[in-house]
Image 1 (cartoon, rainbow, N blue to C red):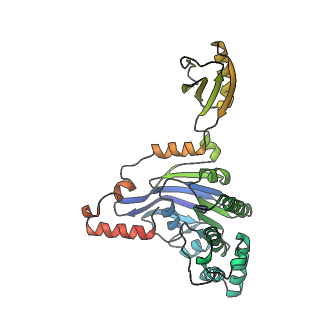
Image 2 (image 1 turned 90 degrees about the horizontal axis):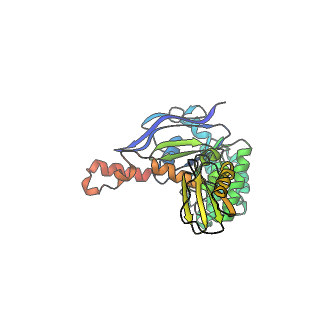
Image 3 (image 1 turned 135 degrees about the vertical axis):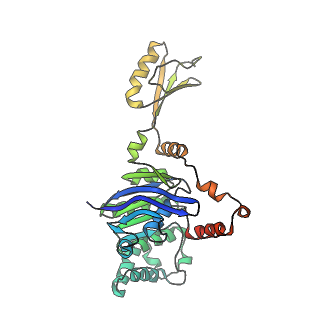
Length: 338
């Protein structure tokens, strides 16, 4: 099966800064793929390269087999993008905004009107179709960005922080909608800072940091890389942490509780209980805390590093920079490096 997205050694440079550093990534057709990373990891730059807002410096990038530069029109027509920023024409009713968007992709006017109505119905704001963008609430604006992405009936839907700043109910509504779209066959690329969102929705996630791919795995595989904590309540507080051998990575005392960090809490718990009972401890209760995806994410991105970082490049004072470098920085901000 042809990949929905394929990049090989993708590089994007802004002067001395490499926003993307040899990024090789494959997203399968029909997959719900998550892209995680701290601010400045290169997620938005990656997306902007796919949709033609940023020209790559090196490497390859294809969408459904179409090169994003030499086959730009075919690649772009297959993508629906809901960006982070509200970049909507504020002078037209939102139904017309969607019709204009469809028209840019060669959809005839009558069909564009039908598609606009269908997209607004699907995201739940059809009754607002004659209102302007500025008159909508924040949640409705997010829904409109999704409707605009859907009006061209894309094979690949890119969602860049789609639930940023929305309330819990809207977040769950959007989760339900995008899951439904994925079930219907739409490939989805999601960037998010909400770890719960990625864990709940995505088949696989890629973790990026400083323009590089740190790892790609399913949420369960990532959580399996961490450790579990077994908390054992005892009838009395131990004086010291017992020596439990090699399976216990760390043992700490918290009042009358022992907290033991192990690789697999479920399979290790019986051995731990036997060892503690053999040492004379009386066990009152036991709890197992699984490693969260958030903990794995923080650990991976803290350990990953590179010699020239975004922060180093951007913390130079303007007075120390030559005019050409200051101009490149200004252009980077305009293009929305993130």
